Length: 195
Image (tube, rainbow, N blue to C red; front, side, top):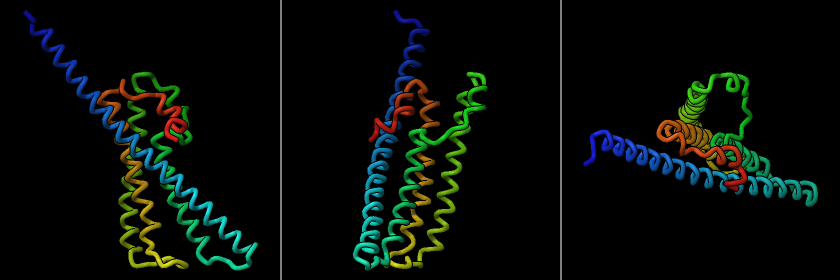
């Protein structure tokens, strides 16, 4: 016959398992978003190199400048920078100042990590809000040398903000649902793992 204490322990273990499954599911989606982001960044970099290279060849070799190459490569670079910043947040590839983190007592370290992730989340929300305002403002404008709406270059700001907020929110939720589910290897060696 099972006593009440054993039954309660099994229910808590099942709850922990459910939370860990949810955390692992969130981490899986987060990794998929990262892989798509890195693939798009690779395509943007390749496109920027090709367009800039064509610009140089046409200007200095064929002596017939392309009027659109500088502008297109600049827009590709803007998108690459915004998406790369979001990938850097997920991979923890951005430079960190570890002075405070190295001196804080161990029980306060998760709180400091949450504060950092909340700050990034807030920054992402600002990018989404103000980037959306910029989209509304620039919706009727067209680029100087190519017939495209300026919505497309400015769309990089709210997309970057959304990705920043998403990656930070997933990190916060996973750290509270199942801290043991987070793998330090992904954070430290994430770039080589995802490329």
